[in-house]
Length: 234
Image 1 (cartoon, one colour):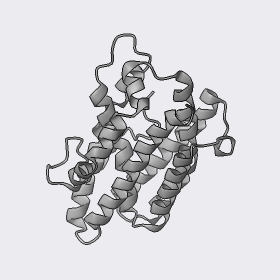
Image 2 (tube, one colour):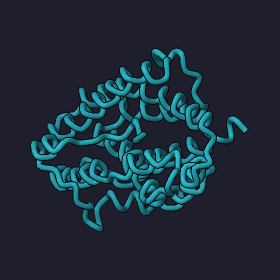
Image 3 (tube, one colour):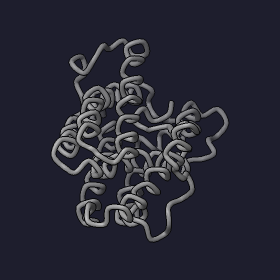
């Protein structure tokens, strides 16, 4: 029950690209972006959806509907990351983007067996999920590819932070696998450390204000997606 959009990096991938899964430096862009969005993270934690997971009271129908809607994002997102990867020149950045594409492809191929929906054409997504997908496509298609990595981090780190805030799950909680499965910061930390190294190697390529703006928009979509998951079926 881990986040289907989260990237789980293998030890081989981490070693090959010289990545670190330790928390990024305190003054890094990773933490500047997160600190700018702490209120959004807290709002996500306080949604009925996340509190329902914490307390084991979330209607399973609403949980299932959330996953089906989110599949729209994943079905469409695979090609977005492939498009960004094709425009990137840094080999590690390309590897991150391709790994994300490959992760989505794997999930998309498994999804019909789990939920019996073949592809995005069979999904009626939440409006906010459709907007989020369009935002990602715009970033991946038109912005410097490094900003696609920036747009990835909220999904990677927010879900970990939420799971960590809910941990440990109460005995018998139906959603314990969600809490346990998302309590994994390594992928987000690896991205944050790479982003820090990338800034050092390419000092003129990342505008921090632009990065924070893109990150904040992605965080906002995450929060609104959680909120809509229960409000839409009330």
